[in-house]
Structures are given as C-alpha cells and as structure tokens.
Amino acid sequence: MSAALSIGEVAEETGVPAKTIRYYEQIGLLPEPARADNGYRVYGARAVDELRFIKRGRGLGFSIADVEALLGLWRDKHRASGDVRALAERHIREIDEKLAELETMRAVLADLVARCHGDERPDCPILESLSSEAPDDCCHHDP
View 1 (cartoon, rainbow, N blue to C red):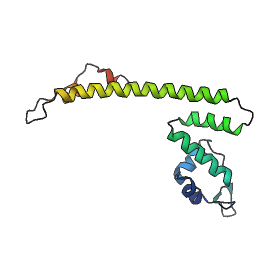
View 2: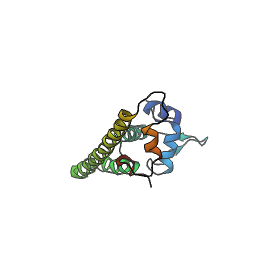
View 3: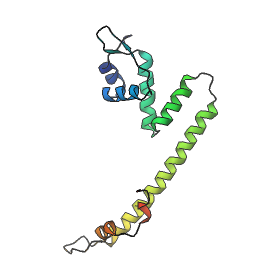
View 4: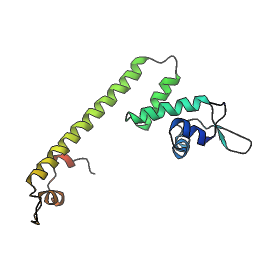
C-alpha cells in the first residue's frame, strides 16, 4: 500500500464505500483527512486500519456510538481492558434481547401460518392479525 491513498483506493482497500467514509468523517468517527493540492482527500495507512476496525465493529452489530467508544479505547494505549469488556458484554446483552424478540415474533408468525389454510378461501388469520387492534407479543416496539 502506498503512503497516500485517494478515497477510492481506501474504499477498495477496506471494502467501505466512499460515501460511507465521507459520512464517518462528517460525524467525527474518522478524523478529516489531509488534502492534496487539488483538494482531494488523501489517506494514510492509519485511516485504512481505522476503517477496517470500524467495518468489523459494525459487522458485529455495534452501534456507531459504541464503535466510536471502541475506537477511543483502541487508540488509548493506556486503556483498561475491563472497559472494553464491559462494552462488549453490554452489546451481548442487547443481542440476547433482540434474539428473544425475534424468537417471539417467529413464534407468533409460525402460529398464524399454522392457522392459515393457505387455500382458495378468503379468510386469513395472518391478515386478520395484522389488521387487528389487539397488540401481539411481537409488535410492542412500534411507537
């Protein structure tokens, strides 16, 4: 990898689209890069490493805020690993909560599918449930 890369080269190197890279800069997740004489962004190896870090964190389902916190911890060589672990453990709890929600949604939907005849008749428990005012266990997260 050369010392100075364009946004297109960084995007290709990391698999992070240029539009996403610009967004990360805009929200302060990545520092603004240096600019060449022509005004184009110029990136170094550190930006590539940070983008790979961000991509992996996002791939594990961490929020932007959590990735920002993790980046801060990664950049801080005097960090306590306990801080990193606590953040990861909190994320595991969030994943467990989402899994429980998904399992509930699946059970409700499986029940509705089992009750649907799936034939030429117009009555359909699935559509009836969706149009019902009664809340299902799976639908509690809508405002």
